[in-house]
Length: 267
Image (cartoon, rainbow, N blue to C red; front, side, top):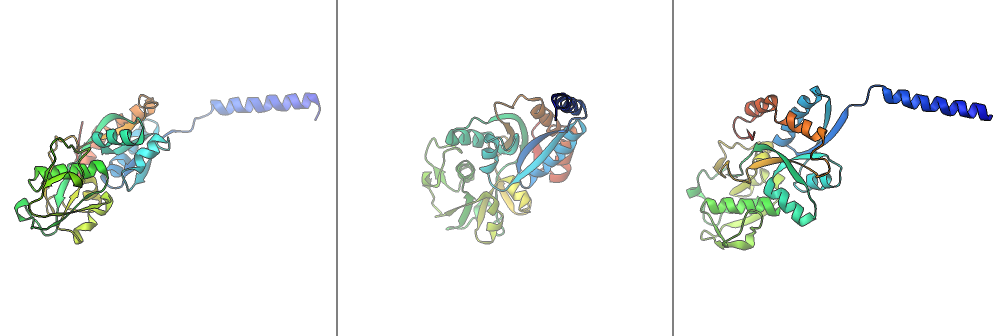
């Protein structure tokens, strides 16, 4: 190839790149993490709304509480929807990350579930009670058990800090079993009572009406789930567009018709 041919080829290549850049752009894609069950279902519905405005949302499902935040911090995700703010803050503290809340998502109270027990008064002495094994949700479960009058805890402990070691009063000698949150619905075959976050209660096909007998207040900070992102993308147009789609009338109607009050829109 002579010099003139080389220059012509280079110019042609440059022109083709410019023309390619002038063509239709690939749809913007936002990777949104959510735990399996209600969160993933709601995010999938929000994705349909977002697509109408030109934002493509890829839903990535998880079955544990740690991976969605780790993936968000590592930029494998752009947004996640699955946790309450106390859990988010505790994760940041323990993992040296700085993930941020960008909006409210839904209200999902944790509850006490059983196949045999129908009231607090009926919880038998020596009952085996299962709680989540991650610190924040396990702490939330212990706070719930204290509110129910089943145990007492050291003064000053919170849902972010409470552990089984903080139990000071357990007059009915309950045995506390710490399990993966996703395993809690299935654990009812082996335990008397399980403290189950609402998203896992629903994905595990538990009935809040028939199997649940005590729930945390819907105003409790642990009941309010949030949408999280990173400081570097929290104000981006894509994240704002997703929040707008999530908090749309269409998604609110989906939540109401699908979950019949067990999960409520927080906006």
